[in-house]
Image (cartoon, rainbow, N blue to C red; front, side, top):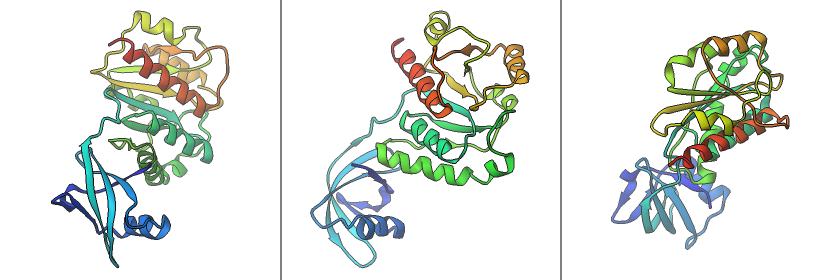
Length: 244
């Protein structure tokens, strides 16, 4: 069941009153939710509310809170993804999957072989943030990832404590080999970098080399960029959790 975002100030004596016009339209008009049906809500303090719709008025609806608790549906590591922007459908899929996997932030990355022009990317940020928000609702995440403004590789260096580049060229080191020698510390801000469908350029590989950024392969198979994103993030999450 998807949950909906509300503000705690609208809760009095275990009754939630929803005034938001868009939420009213979506739940009452579009979903045709009726009195007696169950609804899930999440507030700004990451408190989850299990409720029952008790009353529908012309401009609001009321829900009786049956249960409430601190949501645990979030990663306990500071994991971010910087991903070379893909064409429309693949980019949407990448944002959805990154959100479902719990990343704290999604950085649209402009690379030499990027599939989308810079001016187009800059006009898409707000739309991508909304896509991330909708994914949060669907997967019942407790926190909302931020979709950052467009960045270039050199802008990433000073903002993260551990950076891992996943690429299928110029490396034979897989993630298992990497974590044997390089502990991923859950207290650090971790950034995963994923390239475009066409791969990183010679210039970008030289940039990684000059800045001592590790190049990790995902194995013998060649993945689409949005699939590589899922494989890379999953590898890091499992690697961190196995090192508890």
